[in-house]
Length: 336
Ligand SMILES: Nc1ncnc2c1ncn2[C@@H]1O[C@H](COP(=O)(O)OP(=O)(O)OP(=O)(O)O)[C@@H](O)[C@H]1O
Ligand SMILES: [Mg+2]
Image (cartoon, rainbow, N blue to C red; front, top):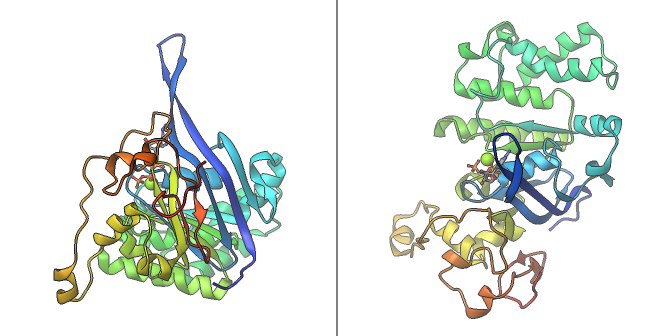
């Protein structure tokens, strides 16, 4: 793997949401461990794919990185600056470098704002707060340039979100995210709500911008097939933990964690002979609730290869060679 400058470094990140009870006097009765101690890095111009089933903590991870949630513990370093302990002014500046694209272009765009105003909004906000020095005419020019860039005519500037198709709406979402010339885009399932034929258009658009502007993506998906082609590296998440991470090609060729194997076995292969001969791993049971503290492997309840020691300790995410890390006692003995 190429050695790229690290832009973003996440260490021991935990997000525990309190569960409260009581009408007048509210008291904490427990915690939802949405993210339970994860670490990863993102290099310049790199795409890190974050995959896992629904509810495993992917969106919470992205929101913690963007500081939309204040993490319970851990650090998020953007070019060495810890965003979790930064002052408001420093955080504001850092936010310009890091923008989000959301899953649902229907819900994430304000229906009462025109496309032009939606795209201009981040510029206006940072201008008002005195972080960005930009004139009104420049804003209009920038919005028009961004619209053309994402494949929308600038004459659509005064249209409202309901006057666009789903794919076009997500183009508006991408243009808005690009408005501040960020270094990192946190894309939370940006194509899940779109038609399959339109998914690839948006993915190609994102890939073009990456090449052109050397952007880094944290790309979230629940589907390994979507993430396969666009990621340099992949991290597989389960119940708030990263179970395995490696180079994307290596992960597909040589999956080590039983959970990754199960996820991969569900990805269809476009060759009928290989497809027919293939063994499907069907996971039994549901994803357990993240409201209990675990002292065994987080995948223990559903693992088809579980051993006695998996019930007794939590395996560490350990490098087993060439940057391929796995949290599984089948491959090493390190515990947390
Ligand atoms: N603000 C919140 N307060 C309390 N619990 C939350 C909050 N946000 C998320 N959770 C819980 O945290 C867990 C992880 O949620 P998250 O949205 O991060 O999952 P996800 O991997 O993005 O799922 P999906 O693929 O469905 O989007 C879930 O159990 C969810 O109910
Ligand atoms: Mg999500």
